[in-house]
Image (cartoon, rainbow, N blue to C red; front, top):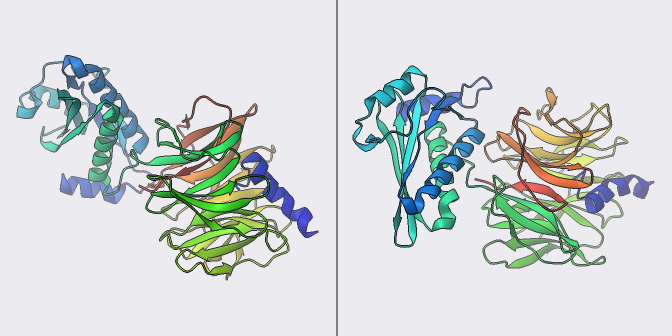
Length: 441
């Protein structure tokens, strides 16, 4: 009876990569309001950037990437200045504040912030100067210079976007964050890392078999993951991204799956079948001491830490089907969180602590993403459509969720706002991309 109930939970993870996956005063005012659900986005306009002939295309690319970053931030509403009748292609002497009519037009149309930039070359490098103005007073609020080779064009835009988010919210932006994920490669499944907007994917592992369920270390230098070197040897490993240095953290008998590092990086929570069924343990990464947290004849897996590190959400079928439970970090005070529906799994706690995302099965027997508050009082479904949605992971600002979705045997990575709006596909090419994990900021 024990094994019959446990196998479905683990099988989905291993074979399907997982259904169970199993300036200052103004800035301060904005910061105080930014977390409100009825927060009004700040209207911002991006003027046409200037660039010498050799780098003119780079200037356009920076502007386009910046607009996309600002839109995704959910802090700013990027206005179409051309549709408002604002002449964005005039020769501007913005550094001297000479084009005051431009600012009056912006103010009359409710544009609170204007961004302008210029690109130049210096030897083999590109030099990008970004400027941020108050739309009404024409006051220069931010002036930043970024220098780098042509491959750094997108990074320049990301840095300026994060500068704007930080200035108006007091929080770190997400434009320079990364997403780790699993992708089919040469007959196996390997770990990859890409920019948060899906660009610049790079392969991290080359084991030739199965590497699954990556999770970031708090310092974003490393990934922990489940590694299958072959059909017999399976471990939980950690790999350092900058050097490729790798070490095994867990090599217990049976399956060792769904690793997750605590917010301070000291403890690794994971599930292992060394006891005959899947149970949740923690490993002290400093002392290598193991602590068993669950003691059930059912399957317990997919632990996920609360932002405080004092609690863990996890999946268990101890009630007859997969449901989300919460317990203290020492295994005490276990409580069931989900009651609606017969299948709820793969919890992911928001960095803000206000929501837990998970995979829910709808009344129409579709696997979608739902959110629930940690007290269980509020629940909502945020994805719809034909795909099998899986493996939710939060952005570090708690405003977005990244996930994988499978349609017609093809799986891709998508981003969606917390309220279920603006779904965006991040991966392209290939057949299967799954198990995304969003890095810390």
